[in-house]
Structures are given as structure tokens and as C-alpha cells.
Length: 230
Ligand SMILES: [Zn+2]
Image 1 (tube, rainbow, N blue to C red):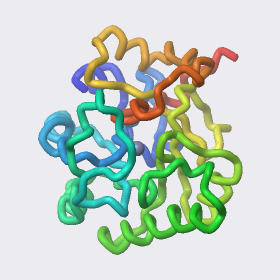
Image 2: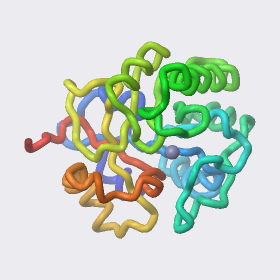
Image 3: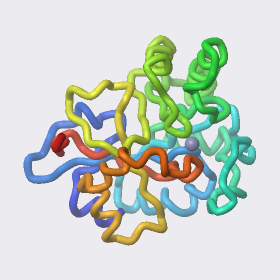
């Protein structure tokens, strides 16, 4: 986080496409999927100390409970609960952004239309009731989305949707298909630095070999002034 604070302009995730660009520094945004309670002790004190904005992507139907979706045994978060509604409200008051991460953390692309609408709409409503303001963004659990999910998310009122495709983006990127790059506490500083430069875009070509359950924890949104070399 110190490296990001020194090297980059860290912007609110909701402003990743609209924040004024600084020609001297690239910008990034930080999001955390799943809203595990260990965020409160680990990441958030560091973010606060460095005055870094971030978004917490929250499985709204799982607040205050153990995760009810499959998590690999090797994942450190397997036995960690999700933050509760009071903690979520406090995070919002502290200035962190709260995004939806659906109700029950399913793979959205395989749901039928009715269940998909429930996951998108009810999570938005539940978070709005807790926070007393609208929630404008969602991150797709397991990175599962397709054109139908994007259409349904837009219909549900989301302005922004975050994937876990590790690509760069520019101002032409679909607002409901904003890529992110997965980073892990296990990453070395060198690996982390490479990820922030977009070096891991190649992973999109290795999608079939990535273990799904380990794809989410903390993610960066590479900034819009990086150029996709394609
Ligand atoms: Zn997740």
C-alpha cells in the first residue's frame, strides 16, 4: 500500500473512469471482494493511515455470517466471517465505498433470469437500506458475467460493474465491464509491482488454468492511461 501511495494516484473506485488524469502519475483504484471481517484488522488501518480510498464489495445476503459459498481449503479466508451490517455502516461513514457483491455469491452467468434479477436487485436494496443511500456498483462474484448479466445489472440500476479480467482499460471500456487485477498478500513486492504495470494481462489468455475460488481478495483497477498493447 505504501508503494501504491508513493507511486500512483489512488482514486475512489467509483471514479476510476472519471478522475482527472495526472500526466505525472498513473492512477489506480483498490477494491476488496467478499467483505471478510479480517479487513477491519488488516487492510483498513493501513488504508486509513495512508489516506487511501477503497471499495468493499459485499455479499449482502451473508452479512455477519460465515461465507456460504465454496472457498478452497487453502484460502486463508475460509474460516473468517463476513462483516456485519453495523460494521458495514461504519465503513461507509468512514468514507470507504460499499459495492454489491450479489446476495449469495453465486456465478451470475449460470443463473436463470429470475434468480439473477433477485441477486442483483435485492442486494442493492438491502445495502441501500443499511447505508441510507444508493449503491451504484457491483463486482461479479467469481468474475462470472456475460452480456445477459451486464444487461440485467444495468436494468437493476448499477452504473458500474467490476470483473476480474486482468486487462487494462480506457475511456471506451463498458462501465459495467471494468477489469481488475487480482493481488494477494502472498505476492512479492516485485510481483505486485509487475501487476500494477499490467504485466499480468497475459493471464487472460490462461483463464482456463486459473483456480476460480482463489481469484478474489484484493484487486487493483489498473488506470485508464495505460495502453492495452493489443
Ligand atoms: Zn467474491
